[in-house]
Amino acid sequence: MNYAIPAPATPVIPVAGSDAFFPVRRIFCIGRNYAEHAKEMGAVADRAQPMFFCKPADAIVAGDDVDVPYPVATQDLHHEVEMVVALARGGSDIAAGQALDHVFGYGVGLDLTRRDLQAAAKAKGHPWDVAKAFDHSAPVSRLHPAAAIGHPASARLTLHVNDELRQETDIATMIFPVAAIVHELSRLWTLAPGDLIYTGTPAGVAALRPGDRFVARLGDLAALQGRIC
Image 1: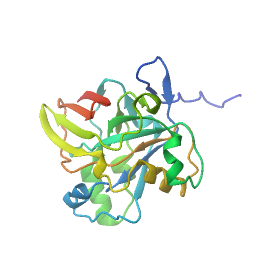
Image 2: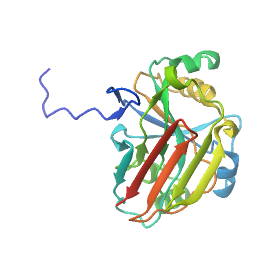
Image 3: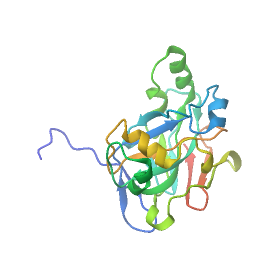
Image 4: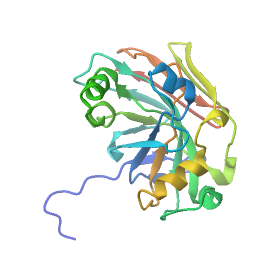
């Protein structure tokens, strides 16, 4: 194919236990999927209908130990630790009972948020894109295939910043579990192999500053460490 300009590189995530890489097509995120986080943000979690937003695929910063640049245009960068789900199969209107068959694997990541820009957008009733969908806003660990670790229904999700525990929960307390998220997403988009899902953050979100080191863990299944630079 004759491109008018050089084709951009496909963002990829390393796969644990192999030399393979997972190509990322899109990043979907779910908001307010833990009741205590919704509460700390002054909102009420909707248990009937999930709230979704997106990040660009090239927002990922993938690996075991990553450097994440402090973003421009903010004075209030916040961390949000999340379990990450990668899809190997797509489809529309996927039944919840079949949704896990579409999952390639799992990781742990951060949904970085320019909180001051989000607050300004909320006040004006504007979309959250500038607060969520910026460069390097989706650090993520290696992916661990479901074929090796299964489909975790319960696991301790934590984030330490400078050795201080900031966020902690069990993924079993998600309002919408993975199968329900995949089902609901597939009613709004035709999902495809390579799609990535950030599944929501627990309470304890707070500011990150240049020089901060972080360690995110999903039980013994996945880990991500890095530095804000």
